[in-house]
Structures are given as structure tokens and as C-alpha cells.
Length: 426
Ligand code: GDP
Image (cartoon, rainbow, N blue to C red; front, top):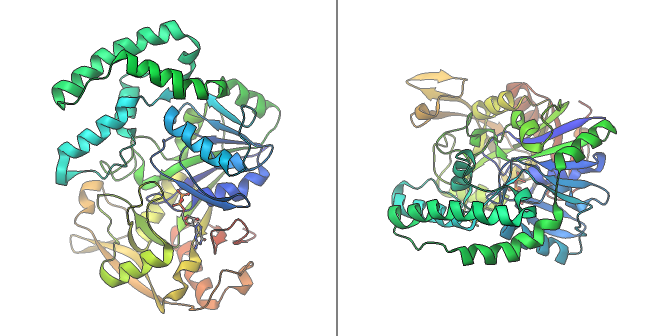
């Protein structure tokens, strides 16, 4: 039996979805353990192209059981719509291959409203939320002011619980934001519609995972976003509202005693960042536009143009440490093929001194990137499938990153398709 987690090392959008899709071949169970529909994993396979937001990326593999753990922000409406889209493209989804934890807390209809209202109130100081309700949801979860999926099986108790929450939430909606209140009838419609639809998928996934573990099944843990967005270890307050780090996987999956053997950290061959907040290595102007176009860097959920920059060694080294990565998957190397000189951010300049360490979030605003240029390879590498066939300049670029971040780069992705990968014997 072996367990593996696939996590982001940077700001998210590193290409975790394509790695989970690739590696699920070796696993029996895939568990999403945190986050909600606020980010998207893009997967391209024999069924087509998908932007998955909540569904685990193992959903495409026959025989793989996919679990939405107790740590996720479960939005019944978004989940149901996503399921319909995926089913519409020929993928089978049933309670046999998708199981929702009865302990997953529910993202209620007002969470999305509150996200929107708060961003509007902030005006030019917005965090750049995707407005999917994630921050209000997690705040309420920790205030014990939402319901758990398993409560759908106790309708009378659930209605009472929702009525209490409604009374409290309407105070906030109307008195703080001057917004319209919700009514019980609105909640009843929502329960009868989306909640009833996902109910057959809700079960005791903790017990299922314990049994799978005892039977020696291989379990893959799938994270959303990256280390730098972790609530505790990221660039707070420009973080997400959950823990994106591997240390949360046992808690958020429903298998609190699990020991994870392998941690594949996903790093993009350059940097991207969505939304506001410090991004030390950021490029601007034509240089940035060319990279954004080459990598098609527009948000999977929002379509927003992503901020771009060179690979950031300082941030990546920090991410590797925080994630305790045992191997790295370097993605989108092919995107850099157009460049004659490839920039790398090797250090930060802070208070006139060069540093290797990732600064405290408040100090990031003052940090400047130190850039070193590498020779480009300027040829198409998307058909390369083994290390030896990569141009010398590409090998040097990858080896430099590997040596600087102190973790073996085992996978090198040279295209979005499942087979566009170089696997090294590391
Ligand atoms: P995730 O949230 O970490 O899964 O990241 P995204 O969904 O934003 O994925 C990154 C994007 O890059 C998607 O559109 C992928 O299809 C694409 N992609 C992933 N790996 C590669 C690669 O090696 N080369 C190219 N050209 N595209 C890739």
C-alpha cells in the first residue's frame, strides 16, 4: 500500500489537475481534502477538456473511488452543475465512484452573497476573491454556523438548525450590508433541489477510507491552490481560507491517522498568481503579455488574466519545505520554448541585502527580485518523452531549479495532454 499527496508549491494553478489525472492510474482512491469551487483544475484526456472545481480529478478513471472529504467547502449547487457537465461529456458518475463525506460542511446560498457584498464594500482594497463564498463559508464553519452534509438525513433537525442560522445571518445581511434577507421558503427550495440531488452520494467516507486502508488500497490526496495560499503558511491575508498544505490532508480527508509516503509538489516552469497581494517576481508590459499568451494564463474559474513572472526560487524553495515535498513535477516547460533568454528569480533584495529566505508577508511588499538569465532552447519540446532528448539548455534550466530548491524533479510536463510527460528515474 502506498499513499501520495499532490500539492501546489506556489500560488496555485501549477497544473496539479493534470498530475492527478496522470497518477491516478496507480491509485484506488482519490480524496479532495480542502477548498471549494474557487479554483479550477484543468484536465485534458480522452473525454475532452475539463475545468474541475470540486470533483476530484480521479473521476475520469474507471474503478477509482473519488471522495470529497470533510475539509472541503461543499457547495451543492456548484457540485451538481459540475457533475452534469462532466456526465454530459460521457464520464460515468454514480455513488459507486463519487462519495461525499457526511462530515463535509455545506456552503449555504448566502455565503456567495456575503463574499460579493464584502468585496463590493472593500472597493479598491479587494482581496480578489473568486466570489464563490469560500471565505464566509470557512469563517462560519469555524464559528459552527453552518450545517454538515449528513444532516440531510435528519430533515426535521436540519430545518430547525437552518432556521436558527437564518435568523442570525439575516441580521448580518440586512444590518451590516443593507442586503435582502433570506426566507425559510428559499432555503426549502434549495434543499429540495440541489441538496436532494447530491444526497445519494453522502455517506460515512471516514469508515470507507479506514476500510480501504486496511485492505491495502493506494490512496491519493489532492489539494487545491498552493503553499503560498495556505491560511497559516501563505501570504496572509492574500491567502485562501483553508490549509492547502499536505499537513492538513489527514484531517481534511477523513483519515486522521494516515501517514503519507510520497508528496509530489507541483511547480510551474514560470510563475503565475491570480488576484491581489505581493508577487515579488512579477513581470510587466510586453514581456508579461507574451508569457501570458504563450502559457494561456487566464483563470480557469474567472477567466481573469493571471499575473506572470519568472520561476521564483525563493518562493519555490519555501513552498517545497512547507509541503515536505519528496518529488517535484515541473509543468509547462514547453511554454518557455519561445524565449531566447529565460529569466529566473534567484534571490530577493530586502533592505539592501540579498536574501534566500522567503520573507514574512508584510515584508514582501518591500522585496525586489534578483534576476539571472539562462539560455533558451528555442525549439518545440512538446514531443520529448525522455530526459536525454531534452535540449541541453532545457536540461540546464531544470537542473538549476532542482539544485536550488533541494528536491528531485521527477516529472517534467511538456504539454497539457496526459501523455506529454517526461518521467525521470529519481
Ligand atoms: P491546477 O489548478 O494546479 O490544476 O492548474 P490549472 O488548471 O490552472 O492548470 C494549468 C493549465 O496548464 C491547464 O490549462 C493545463 O491544461 C495546462 N497545462 C498543464 N501542464 C501543462 C504543460 O506541461 N504544458 C502546457 N502547455 N500546458 C499545461
